[in-house]
Image 1 (spheres, rainbow, N blue to C red):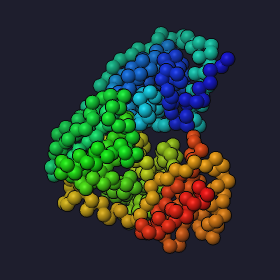
Image 2 (cartoon, rainbow, N blue to C red):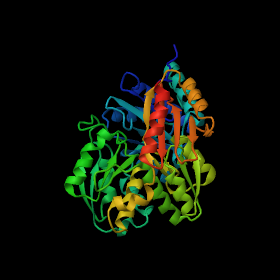
Image 3 (tube, rainbow, N blue to C red):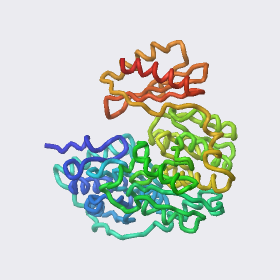
Image 4 (tube, rainbow, N blue to C red):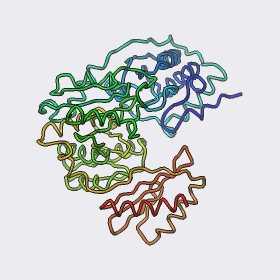
Length: 452
């Protein structure tokens, strides 16, 4: 019987429970399939702090080398460190991580040379089919000699490159910052990147521990930033930074202990990137605040709106030549970083913006915080399409588009988006309005329709 890997090979990556869903045999088959798909002479790998990553990465390397392809092991690293290695070495890459998922999970994020993404429609379906065949029939022996495995430390190069990309970071005024690495890879990369900067850093949960003993390494859930928010206030810090497990996302806390909206951070970084590249294009997904396209236009740029999801952002960046892209989930993409996302670059931009200005972070961000937002609200709905159709009918007299789910815009300045989850029976609602009272009224009205 053919092994079915559809449950662990998702739209953009591989992810599953170890060892019941993802084990060394599967990793080995995926390594061989990836080597064959890319046709590259060598592949670079890195892994996060999960214990299972050691065995999975080694097995993957066996699969790669079985096809006569060399492996460069970068060892422990964040996902954006793997993208850096793929970009600078110009080779395909494999990152062993399950990001913010609980400890019993692991996974693989694959990219082509230059950190180009691999998704279902750009190779992942073929890699899956080949891996399934190898699991059933055995991995075919390659005519050439097996590839070699070598180790290469890229952390210092990564740290230097990140600072090169952020204007002003080397000349900031002294800042006091609290960093919560969530026992994830920020604990490995932050010390290297922050070295030499005018930063007094208080470290929280920097010990690499894939069992996540303190809290989940998922800062999009406010419960996981509560410790950091308290510590920022207690330390009298200028700001706080929270990284997820593989450190490709970063959330910012202001000096009052308040979480900074990723949309606000998107607008701030967009303005800074446009100062470097006047008139350029900036990508934002459709649930970011209306502030983002406003700030882009005010600074002479062209905003382009996309669907939610990194594959859409990266595709639009490549198509339009955009310099920057931001998502409300805390992912930030940079053209100078091979169109890939980096939590570290977002953190450095926040530090540079604050450190080259006067006043507090909350004062600095006032200009980017213009509307009242609901945040994403999930509701369990069995027939999502029928419910969305009902909402569309209710608001048929307003401006409606269906780029991603249903977006309704009012002449009074409020808007909402309802879209279905790809993996669960959920509808996701985001509402924004000029003031809190209007936002709450619209939110409650739409939620009544969704849950009624």
